[in-house]
Structures are given as structure tokens and as C-alpha cells.
Image (cartoon, rainbow, N blue to C red; front, side):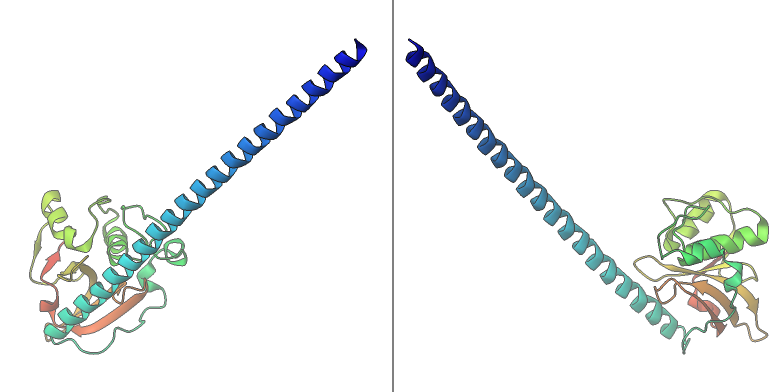
Length: 213
């Protein structure tokens, strides 16, 4: 009788061990399945990121070409210059961060042309409308119209010049007007690199409208 009990105990132990091994195998299979799924999702995510970067680079190249073409069409030659080392007073916290890493108080991404001109409007008037979500340069004329801000084709000191340059457009700040009617402007991101620059003796027709904040 004792032998039978011992035999049953051994059989139960073997059965338990078999079940434990089966459970471990199932657990390992599930772990591998989840790991494979995670790697697959990570690969898909990385692919989307790469595609997004590629598209952004394509649009940036298109923007640079459009600005260059518009400048050439208006008879504007040469490169923009570094100009004011204080960058028109543009806030350092916005400039020191990478391009498009922050959103400024007016809803624009930092170091973009629109962020700079928004800052200049605020610096001049103590107020700049919040145009977040509709802040591309090409949207500024429509925003101005909707806000009751006048605009026209004649530049004024302290106005914002708007250039038609797909895909995003471009805006500049009119610093001064020369005796021959040309203008001197300050700006950010003309070369789509997020930096400040200035241009002098610019044909005012380079910009199709001026917003009189």
C-alpha cells in the first residue's frame, strides 16, 4: 500500500512538473509574441518618423526655392546679412531653443519668420493677436482682415511685409524706407534655417501686401 501511495505521489509530481513546463513554454511564447509585436510597432513608428522628416526636408527645400525665385523676380540680388547681433530684440529663450521646439506667446513656432514679426508687433504696440493654429505667413493677410487690421501695397515703417512663397509664405518687418522707395527689412528664417537676417534696398514689390499693425 505504501508503494502505491509513493507511486501516486511520484506520478503527481511528474504531472505537476509537466504542467509547469507547459506553462513556462506558453509564457515564453507570449513574451516572444509581445516582443515581436513591439518591435514591429517600433519599426512602423520609426518609418513614419523618417517619412515625416523626409517630407519636412522636401517642403523646406521648396520654401527656399520659392523665396529665392520671388526675390529674383523682384530684382533683389545677393544674400541677406547677419545684421543686428541682438536680432531685433527677439527673446533669447526662443532663439536658444532648437527651431520649432517652442510655441511663442502668440501661437507661433520659435525662430520662424512669423514668430519674429509677432514679437516685433508686440514690441512696438504692446499687443499682438494670438494666431495659433492659423499662423503660417500666407495666412496673416486673412487673419488681419478678420481682425480688422488694415493692410495695403505701400510699405510703412513698422509694418509686416508678406511674400507669396509656397508652401508657407514668408513675412518680414519693415525697419525703414529709403529715399528711392526701397525698403530695409529684418526677418527670421529666410533660408529656412531658423536664423535672423536683414536685407537692405529691397524692392517693395517683393512683398504683395503690408499689414499695418
